[in-house]
Length: 336
Image (cartoon, rainbow, N blue to C red; front, side):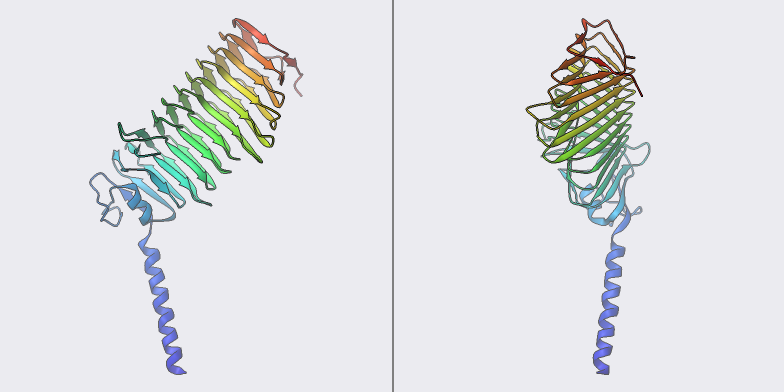
């Protein structure tokens, strides 16, 4: 009995030491450098070279620092743990879209933050989109550039909290930013331009409420600017746009549209400048509802447009110098 107890104690001690060594093998902060090697432990003294090695080395909830300017991937980066990935100030941390999207996030419960990154397609490399999230709790994108990716720049299709700040998305096809699947997004001081579809598209999906609040941003020179859209009977969409420049979008500056008996799409627009589009601010479909206050709407084909929806105005918008200032019923409602 004494020998058995001694053996159990030794096994317990070995297990404790093993688990401790395993935990210590993963770093809270892993480092990447252009002269690093993936054979290194990803420490500051011995940095790794590419993101997959750093993602293996870093502990869940840790950080990956890019120490100098360079590209840090050779194919799609699949993030399966909570992590912050950043380039240090003054460095350009590049993640190319090659052989698919640049960054994929599809793991339940993860929170991912990306800071000071440049995401571009590798010429001839088969790159598609920028950042694509289909599962997880949160995505933060700060001070990043997503440029010229053929598919969506940033696409979130899950019920995550999304924060996009001081970020530029420009060039390429489909949407600059697509929010759906019950995501809750806040976009602040972003610039989204030159997309062949919408700059920002917020989509209602089955049995979800998807929201987006857009503040102090520029959405310009896209096919449409900000679009809130639902075709699902229970896919609710809620969008607000405030203090932003919505300019030179070909079709619509701001649009709320609900089709075929879909769930409500509500959109509020306040203190924006909306100009040089075919239609400045529009509501379409019986489930769509738009509230506008304090906007400057000028030099569009039509300033404010309503087709079968509810379009309410505080009566304090500057709607001038459009080919037609209004179309359809615009109801003036006193503010409370």
